[in-house]
Length: 331
Image 1 (cartoon, rainbow, N blue to C red):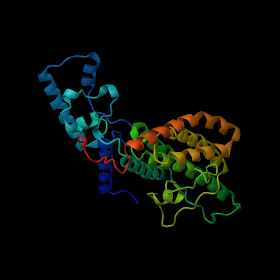
Image 2: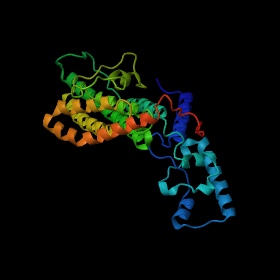
Image 3: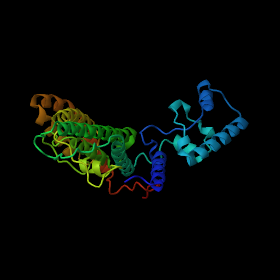
Image 4: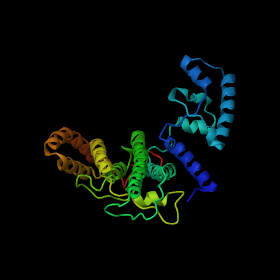
């Protein structure tokens, strides 16, 4: 169903919360506010007196208060255009300069990815419509007797192909943003790495015989259910698309290898299992190439494993209370 105005407001508010807590917008870009004037001052190293600082702060504060109330008027600026700290008297500006208040929270990054997945399904459904079947079309038939029906099947393949490509691109981007901004080495980072790998495994029916498709799979049912112009009877699913499946399998192979090789270098819970999955993944595709790659990445995995075990001797995840402030040791 179409989003109501109330849902749109909640959606915008959720994006704003992610900006404050994680320091990125819905597209994964850093959230920074500022002005060309202050950027120019920074580049030239001009020193301003107290009166000028106060005026700039008041003007910037008024502008950014208006921006916080009207998200469409926000300016997205580059790193060298952020306001200097002395003028960051407005709460919105101060929060963005901090670069995200909770980048260490894996739970927030998982919520961010979940929202990006939902938004990608909606966007793909809105931008790529499923064509209406012609009269007499029989879904699932081995061969279509009519030329019109055969042409419709090809257009159906193309529509679903475009939807899946758009969704994969946006969700993959969300995972990469999370890893780039701290989720890859935060507490409970294994949740991000595992779900990212499972998401890529869902691109095809198999991932080299390793693992099962999980809830991260963006399936056809989710695509259809999120169509804003869905008729009373859902459109038929597309016939098998061997060309697209082959292309997806190649992309899946490269992306999974990219994920595994980075993941095994991070100390995390379940690292041994993650390494075993990587070994099985490589051996399932090429035994000769697997021998070379495993020998290359084994020392990095062993180093990450030793770091993880060393950390466990100092503290465990059950003993460390991440929601509390640090206090002097007792005893």
